Length: 330
Image 1: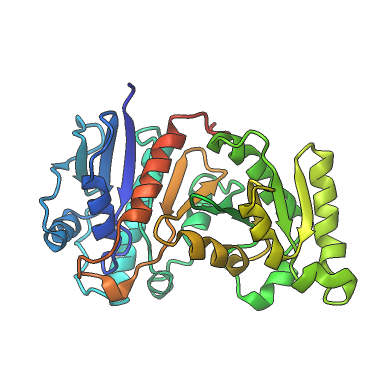
Image 2: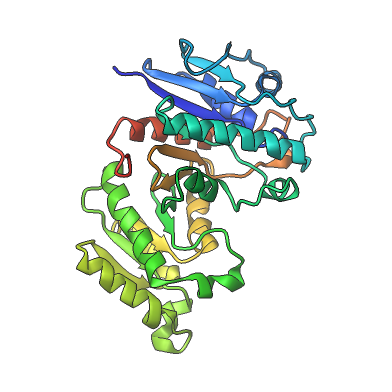
């Protein structure tokens, strides 16, 4: 079988990212996988001590022969100080450097997929790194391509029409174009994931999906026109459906995935069902990018107690999707 090379970034060194990434990578893997842990060598050595394991060997570059598991330190800057659970700018810069290296390696074909460990957005802001999150940064690095944020577990799949926004800004940011783009991404992604019919349900924004205009007009002025556009393009899209009903319908098998209007509308039910095994998949990139669905978990950093289940799920899905034809590959 053709080797599949997957890069795992360290994330914030003061969070659980290095621990869960290393723990997931050290679990038994198929023979054709090559896993590269990206970030300062000292970060991986420390993570290995925390979990009571030996770190994989270090490689000088991705051009070197790849063992089943390895670490790679692409950034020549001094490694960040280790302050578990603390928000620090040196940690943010280290995480940022690993992301840049992983994205570049994926875009030039040296990596077939990337699994990113959690970053601390507050630390990024303090360090002057003005990016809302991984999704937006990776889209920019790929040439400002359109992307969508998909979160899924064993039973639930959600794509967000708007992402990292304050709640008060959501109605103004919600456009028909954004909904059509999210649904279109899903229409391509679901067959990639194995769902041939690609049945998509679309949430309303307001309680009761606006209740005929009594509780808001966005369903009539924005969401319904967007759904009509989707249907004209041949996509199997239904809605708007009240958010308090659509996820029950999704779990009952009526839809293969849901388009949520804002971050917590989609992620609250997803994490309730799949917090320990959820996966974040960025749709629209020319390579596969997944991540665990949790954050830095600063309260667990350095304890060795953080579960690698979500990272392992992200790793397995990255390998699975990398072996298939990416709808957005150039």
